[in-house]
Image (tube, rainbow, N blue to C red; front, side, top):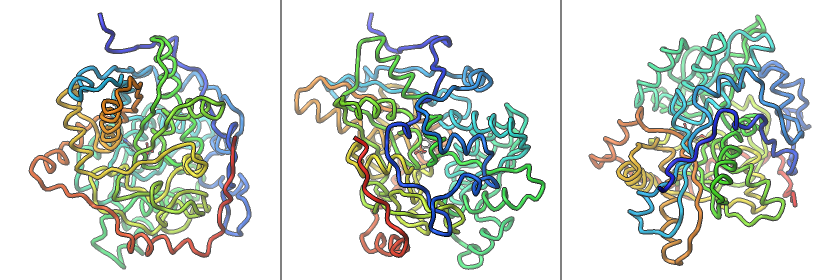
Amino acid sequence: MEIKKVLLSEDEMPRQWYNILADIKMNPPLGPDGNPVNPDQLAPVFPMNLIEQEVSSQRWIDIPDEVLSVYRIWRPSPLVRAYALEKALDTPARIYYKNEGVSPPGSHKPNTAVPQAYYNKVFGIKRLTTETGAGQWGSALAFACSQFGLTCKVFMVRVSFDQKPYRKSMMTAWGAECVASPSTATKAGRDILEKNPDTPGSLGIAISEAVEAAVSDTSGQTRYSLGSVLNHVMLHQTIIGLEAKKQLEKIGEYPNIIIGCAGGGSNFAGIAYPFVYDKIHGKDVAIYPVEPAACPTLTRAPFAYDHGDTAGYTPLLPMHSLGHTFVPAPIHAGGLRYHGMAPTVSQLVDEGMLEPKAVEQLAAFEAGVLFARTEGIIPAPETNHALACLVDEAKKAKEEGKEKVILCNWSGHGLIDLGSYDKYFSGELKDFALSDAEKEKYTSIMANYPKPQHLKSR
Ligand SMILES: *Cc1c(COP(=O)(O)O)cnc(C)c1O
């Protein structure tokens, strides 16, 4: 009998995360004075135990028992062989996808929400603030906070708040408060509403609001939590790739190609970094982060220093960025509408270790629908971007007549995103490629910032 799912027992779940900072060189984040940020400067925003993880260069970091026991609600997640998709594409490639849609909020995001809530709780924090795009991060943090008894306030990007009302219902079910961003609750939000009352909002704006709401609480019991981009988030997500590696080993496979969609870079990093480690040490594996053509950070934006948020509250991060005031077209993959990219992903792209791809919204939905009609489960619009690349690679394997092994991160299900499928079926969805003129306009904001060095890790 052919094996469809490769499962790990709870005992076999990894007990440590993999920290890529042990194996690559990085440009430092820079503070307002132009010097590298020192960890104490981040203390009003994050708890010190997470700041220590953010800057750690220890290769393996233990996963606390309290985190493992919440992970066990859905982890280890299944690795699934996509036989039906392979058949539909008539490809010699063997396709495996790691199903991160089985978590309570339906995506990979609780892999970091749970440890973040845990470390804040241990540090004595009572309340977390955050932003959310499509709502997956807000719902993941709401779930995690409910597991550890923390209060949670979520600023949700306006366009998604209107398009995806059920994510707000999920947050409310887990006891969190969710408001549309820009809001009148913060100075950052009020300033933007004054200039542009009809703005669809952006992740950059929502981050400014959530950071402001955290640091302006004078009791000292509120901190901010970020769902992607930062080093400690990438670290927590490596549980995905570490499990996948064990699962593939069980059946004697090793991937030729690894694919993940990339918004801020966390689910991609999660599946890819344990294999990037192998690549740094000489393995031959092609690794593709996939982004939307409407927000082409890795494929078209410069590797530069830029702020992580629109108001410019965060340190300057060395990353591929479209400029911190960039407001992407309102595509339905809300989780991929971020102007920047994780510094570690950006660094690896700059060194040529990863080969980024961009796909259009309609091609993404086409691949998602094919997936739903073959493998049966309905992917999130973000995940569809990875699937479009997967389909391309499977077709290429057919043309070349090669039995490639492709590993794809299935970052989440689309059951709360069915409104966007309806729009796709009724022909209302459009492609939005960013014009060069628009790109120049937004990226020019970084012209006078320091420039990161081109470093080589191997
Ligand atoms: C948030 C999200 C993404 C994009 O975020 P990353 O940090 O790049 O992983 C991708 N897929 C799903 C399902 C998401 O919820």
